[in-house]
Structures are given as C-alpha cells and as structure tokens.
Amino acid sequence: MRRLYPAMRGLLHAVLLGLLGAGIVHIAVLLLVPQFSERDAWSRLSMASDLYRMTRLDAEAGGAPVVKSVDPLFYATACRFDLGEGMVRVKAPGHVPFWSVSVYDRNGHNIYSFNDHTATTGVLDAVVLTPAQMIDVRKELPEDLQGAIFVEAPIEEGIFVIRAFVPDDSWKPIVSRFFEQSSCALQDF
Amino acid sequence: MLKNAFLTLLTLVIAIGGGGGSVWYALKVQDGVGAIRIGQWTAFPDIGTSSADPYSKARVAREGVLALGRAEGLSFVAERDEGGAELRRECTYRIEGGFPTARFWTLYAADQSLGVVETGKPRLAALQSYGVVRQADNTVVISASRHPMPGNWLLTDGAGRMYFVLTFYDTPIASSTGLSDVSLPSIIKAGCDA
Image (cartoon, rainbow over all chains, first blue to last red; front, top):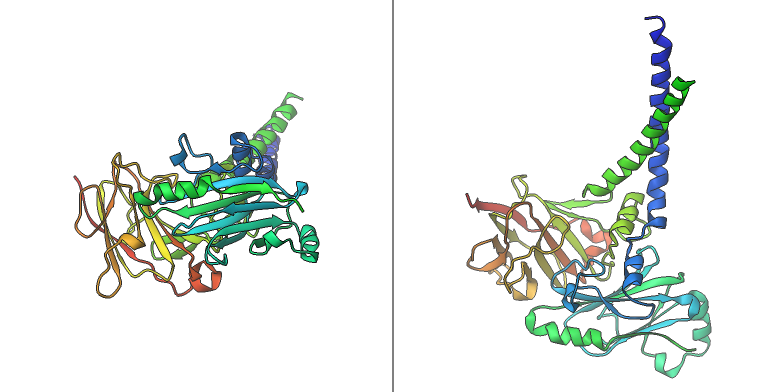
C-alpha cells in the first residue's frame, strides 16, 4: 500500500496536467480552426472558379452546390475579388421580385449587406473598394459610377454574394437570366 | 524511467485528444451561444459577423457558411413542437399565428443539415408569404404533412427528424433592438402516422 501511494500520486498528477493541457489545446484549436480551414466558403469557391467569376451557389445550375445556399426559394451567385488589385464593380441589369447583396471578408464574415430598396432604381450596380480607394474616387467621381452603390470595405480579399427570390417556378428563368447577365469585374480608375 | 515516459505520454494523450475532441464535439452540436429564442424558434443574429463568438466563427469556417446579412434577413429554426417533442417527418403539424413585419417570409421543412427536405415531387417542401391564404385577422394557418391538406399545405416527406426554417427578408426585426417584442407562430402537433 505504501509503495502504491507515490505511483497513484504520479498518475493523478499526470491526469490533472493532461486536463489542464486539454483546456489549453481546446482554446488553441478553436482559435486556429478559422485560419486553417480548407472547407470555408472562400476555399470552396476558389476550387470551383477563378477570381472575378460569378459562380452559382444553388444546385439549380447543375451539380452539388458549391457553398450551401440555404433557402430553397432563393437562387444565389457569388464572385471572389481582391481589392489589392483594384476596386471591383458588380452589375446585374434587370428586375426580379427581390434581390439582396452581402459582402464577406476572407473568413466568411458578413461585413456589409443591402437589398434592392437601397438601389436608386432597383437595379444592382455596386462598387466595392477600400477606404483609400474611396478617397481617390471622391476627388473626381467618374460619370458612369454616379448611380452606383459604394461599399467601403477595409479588406483585401472578399466574396460578393447576390441572392434573389424565386417566388414560384415561373420566375426561375427570369432569375436565372438575371444572374447570367450579372458581371463582376475590376473597375479601371 | 519507463514509468515517467508512460506518465508523460498519458498527459499528452489526454491534453491533445481531450482538447481536440472537445472542440470537434462543441462544433458538432447545433445549439450554441448567442442564440435568441422566441417560443420554439431559435435565431443566431450574430452568426457570420466579426462580433460572433469563437465557436460560431469556427463553425462558419468549417461548414463554409455564408450567413445572411442584417439588411437581407433573419432565419429562425425550430426543432421541437409546442409540447416539447422533437419534430418528426411522419407527423402532421399546424403552424399558426401572426408573423412579424417583413417584406416577405419563407418557410421550409429541413433535414439535419438544414437543407430542404427532398420530396421527390415537383412541389418543394417550402412556402412563401405571397403564396399563402390568410385568415380574417391576418394570421396564417399552415399544415405541414406528408398527406395533402386543405388550406396552406407544406409538403414534407420521408421519416425521421425534421426542422422548420422560417426566414424573414428585409425586416426590421433583424436589427437587434427589434427582437424583444416579436411573437412567432406556434407549432402544434396534429397527429402522427402509425
């Protein structure tokens, strides 16, 4: 019994130390998951298409959806951009019952969102740019950018997502065409 | 010597295994911090923003979610009925009551991963507010069932667990101040197939 006691103490010591370590590892892993995830929205999109390319997120376009677009009554499309290369302009002519836009950063955090009531004529025309680029644009606003919605985002890489409501089957071709005509491109300035 | 090596190994196994395993488990369970409960409905208004808690952030990164923005809408998920029982696909439910202010809303029956229930028919397991019949007092009564129902019918199919997802678009309740006095429809079990 007397010889067993130090061994038990050693074991208890090891278990307690292990639990303490588990706590530290738990916090460390939790904070590292967003940095090292290869399954986040950005990584999935980059496997599907290039920068500045509109990619449908819903299953309607064929194949499994790239990023889970949850609502079955919605279509969604996304494009990745890099503001380090310049500001990006997203346009989608045409009218649909409802559209909404979200701008996400590299980690998939929503940093800005707006919907069709924000746009002057209900037509989607938006420019995403950094605060520094905004200062340059403010000095002399180009003619063709005057109706655009400016989204000032303090990020470099990001994702632009357009969602559109499909109330019933008859709207499917119209919403699909709305997305086919949408463009996502670097804007010269 | 061997004893010390064994104890060191044990410590490391508990630390790495326990730490990693507990993160994996915490990300797997649906319920989380930052949830807002109204009746049977749960929403996570902070998910997908940079003010979210670390668990939501990790879940967003792992599942590749692109959460709805505040100006877009707010989703509520229900997993239990008024009686506290889990929602089952083989049961019929009545979803009734008033809906808060929004441009429109959608309601669909979902599986575990919150994807829409496959019905195997052209009709989707989803309804939207422009396509429902309202009562005289502007409330809505929806019957969710595998069998055709009079009135507003939300088609479901299969067997097993089910969730209802109710999303309000372009709504003032998505701003955090509006959430305190919102009431959502109740989910009442009307019967089950044997």
